[in-house]
Amino acid sequence: MPANLTLDSLKTAFDAGEIDTVLVVFPDMQGRLMGKRFHAGFFLDGGHKETHCCNYLLALDMEMNTVPGYRSAGWDQGYGDYVMRPDLSTLRRLPWLPGTAMVICDLLDHHTHDEVAVSPRAILKRQITRARDMGFEPMMATELEFYLFDNSYESLRGGIAGLVPSSGYNEDYHIFQTTREEDVMRAVRNHLYGAGIPIESTKGEADAGQIEVNYRYSDALDTADNHTIIKQGVKEIAWSRGKSVTFMAKYDTAKAGSAAHVHQSLFRGGQSAFHDPEGDHGMSAAMKHFLAGQLAGADQMMVFLAPYVNSYKRFCAGLFAPTKAVWSCDNRTAAFRVCGEGTGGVRVECRIPGADANPYLACAALLAAGLDGIERKLELGPEMRGDLYQAQDVREVPKTLREAAERLKTSDLYRRAFGDDVVDHYHHAAEWEIAETDRVVTDHDLRRLLERA
View 1 (cartoon, rainbow, N blue to C red):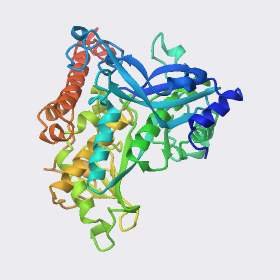
View 2: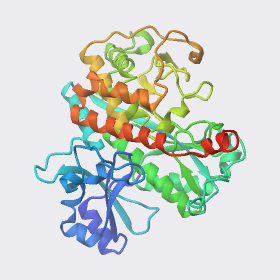
View 3: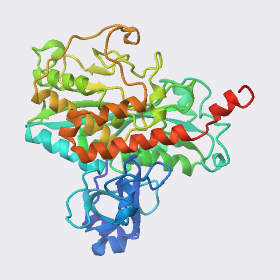
View 4: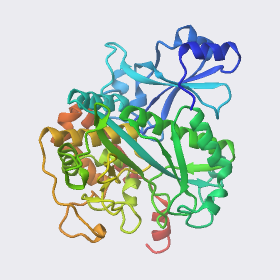
């Protein structure tokens, strides 16, 4: 697999006429990549040190509306600048865009040059530092699901009726159905691999046109960076072939939702700190405390795992999205699934996040709760078994963004871990999403009420 670029290798590629453009980007609140396209010559001549962007980019909604009420940026402050500082360890080629490289930036305050507290990448980095101060290296991986459609994005701008999935029926592990998608998916695998992302596989998922992409686990920050680049790459590669994709958690009431399951473990000295061959299911005391912490904080972290009103439409019985905040071994009906039990690969899979989640925020929220469990030595309750959709008298996953936002607002866990400014910022984002959904007339309203009301 090609290594990431250095400034020297970028200069060599530039001099050879192979690269002329550098995307200088950062992840926003929604997990999208925002930034600028630099001429490679300018980037090499000094642009790699820093550039600037408007600070409203961490105070917008999905439609790029300037949302009132944020303390970090607003009209009353004049919408000033953030500094974008490239993390040169992320510099890489993008094989699907001719002559193009990309680098991910950290956002800094324009005056103090401190990292912006509400920046998703900074939030995750602080939790990684916390873990390292405790002697752990957090390792994570995500399984990213999406739907592929034969429609182009351009054809859908006049209306989204008539979406045509890329296959005709449920294609979970189905080789013939996924062969029909190879024009896009072979390019996805090869181009992402060429961008330095260790792609392992793609497969059909649990409905027509639904696909999952898997890549090798890594340290938590690299995992979030890779996840974000994969989403960008999948969209651009599909678009280039006249197709479209969606990472919505639930694009159709009757269809399976799209998840971004997060696998997690802590390492110490290059070895898993989660594995104890003498422990129950091969779990160490640290792993049990970590999992207990995530269970204790499950209801408080939901805004970071399921950020939109639509996200909660995925949590329904029988479609492999969890409804109960419980743990179980190798059981896909639990919110927290212990995988690899009894082996050195034992880990926690959180099945709550949807494909619409910002990976930096999801990984940070999970890590913060797990570390809190270790610090407080929380005891892990008994394993739940069987069909946990039917379990009674157990904690449930919040059913709405409104409920999740209230849990975050009053969360002592996240106010301690992230700080009041971060919690208030993302609580405000959730409140805006709720208000906008409450305000807008939907096709569902029209179908139900136009004639009958």
